[in-house]
Image (cartoon, rainbow, N blue to C red; front, side, top):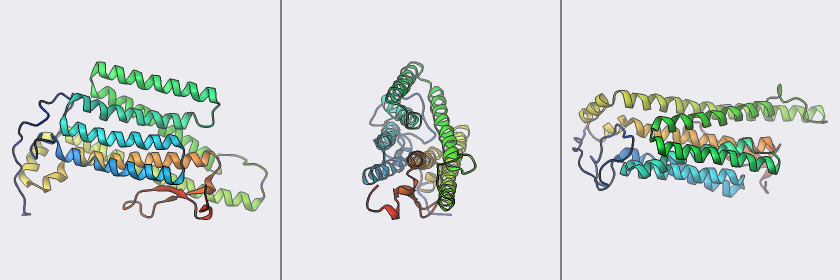
Length: 303
């Protein structure tokens, strides 16, 4: 048997009674009176770390401002989720969940408004803002987490599938058609370059989608078998029971997937502008490092 410490008994918390409309499988206030769900709180540090990594990348390499705003929204998700899981009070739940909606709205604007006329960008911005306001007000009225989850999944799916369509039609040599009057050697170079970019973009997507699928499976198992999982955690004790905190794994896996999604959006923006040669993806290891869109080695003097 591995050495372990018995789980303390749950007790009253500093933040008072639970007012959130949803509670998770982690027992409340067993570790400290100041954090209702300590593991679910700490695992949000993945969001905070990756948000600062993304913000630093946007500032250092001069990526489009919309993605800097996106990473700030991503940071708000992580911070809001930490506050929500620490307190389990309704206002912090809204901060966590609505920030998720707003991030996807920002990415939707980045995808649909790019390369449009000023008037079209304004209209798209107004439409997306109106949608975000409607979701905010209607969710506050319903107070039904399923509505939030469905809206988040719908907006995310629209953004991802639209981005995939754009990616294939501007980078796949068999789909994009003619790229202008260029010689055969240059055409071959561009085809090879874009095929390589497309391959790595799909790798980025496959990893992100796989993490989301695993996280979703864990989410459901955590909800369905919560009673059994709580008994197992108490049987194995601390710290090993932490590994059975399913919602904590949700934070880690979806945090990585969301970061990958924003990084992909940044790279795709350069490709849409025909600036593939200016940047490259720095991703030394698929599972032990995080991807960053950086200045291409051939363009080190500036984008």
